[in-house]
Amino acid sequence: MEEHNRNEGSSGGSVGVDAGSVSHSRAPNFIDRLISTGLGSGLSPVAPGTAGSLVALAVYFIPDFQKPYFIIPAIILFFGWGTISAGRMETSYGHDPSRVVIDEIVAMWISLLFLPKRILLAAFAFLLFRMLDIFKPFPASYFDKRNGGISIMMDDVVCGVYTNIILQLYLYFGR
Image 1: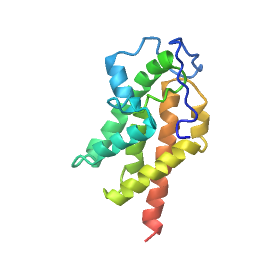
Image 2 (image 1 turned 45 degrees about the vertical axis):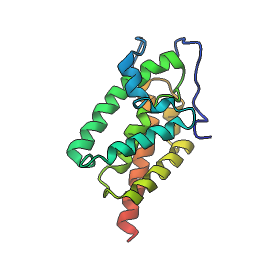
Image 3 (image 1 turned 120 degrees about the vertical axis):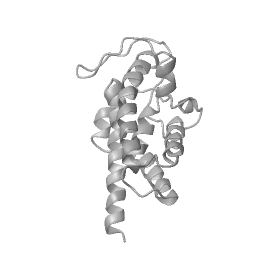
Image 4 (image 1 turned 120 degrees about the horizontal axis):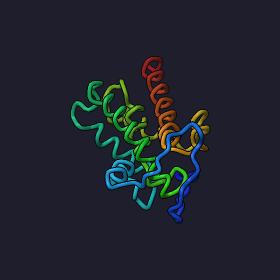
């Protein structure tokens, strides 16, 4: 069910792009594939989005990665790079291909931004993010229906922001 809304076009043809999205007419190269598939985790035959989210957690647990001067530039860099590479992958593999997981990686980091680095909190963030990513609350559902790299990234970013807000509120009021 997790990947219920993603299609993999096998024709290799071009996908129409919304008027407001960036054009990525160039075919994806090795770097695009490496970035967009989260170092290959998106090629998992089972639950590639979950595999990408787990890669994000593994990177998050690198010492000091959670510090704003590391995680914020990583989010910005991979959001921009992910937008371009995901757009190129969409032209080859169809609307929001399941192999593209850079959106889950960036969103998972957003889910954990400014939170204490605790294993149980990270596990809860992971579960909450995956649940929100499946159900796509508005405006994630809006972006999910659109084409282009920015839309691929934004539907998960919205879920990451929601996850972070919920966890921040839990930590603030739940004590």
